[in-house]
Amino acid sequence: MSWVEVARLSLMLAAAAAGCAMDLWKRRIPDLITWPALGAGLILSFAEDGLGGAFERGLVSAVLGAAFCGFVFGMFYLWNRGMGAGDVKLMAAIGALAGFSGSLGIAMCVGIAGAVLALVWIVVSRRVGEQVQRLVRRFRRAPKEPEPGAAPPERLTVPYGIAILAGAVWGALVQYGIL
Image 1 (tube, helix red, strand yellow):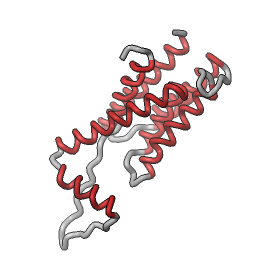
Image 2: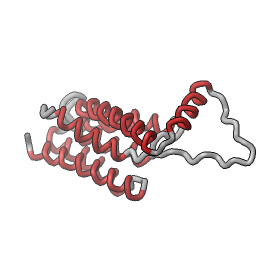
Image 3: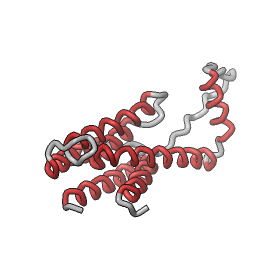
Image 4: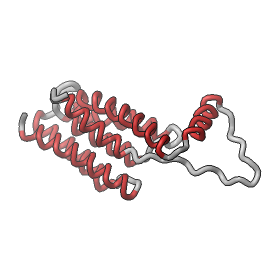
């Protein structure tokens, strides 16, 4: 493992950990974490292997990894604001640091970790019935009927930075053959 690969992996895990901490503390992931990590991923990838190719290390792989993760998680952002823009930018930075081939596995690991986190969060918050009704309405495309005089229920939000950190660690362990 080259020093650049160690630096990329270290930065990826550090950015994911910092994003997780900020998401838990402030419920947002600032640009101060995401943009430098994305830039570092692009620069380190180019420094190690030049332009490279899609499935090799290099700038092309880093750009494709960032685009893939940004697109996949950006769709959740656009679909009823399922996650915040900071989550999307952090995933793009992780994609750049992991490269295209690494971003495929990491995105899958983050998605699975996010699904588990959401289910646990719903159960712990004791809002299972409400969330099931919301899901049924969404798939029926039925508008919500407000009760007269009742305040709308508070939207349940999950700090997705936890899932991003768990998925990044899990994906890195799989990518390097530890798991």
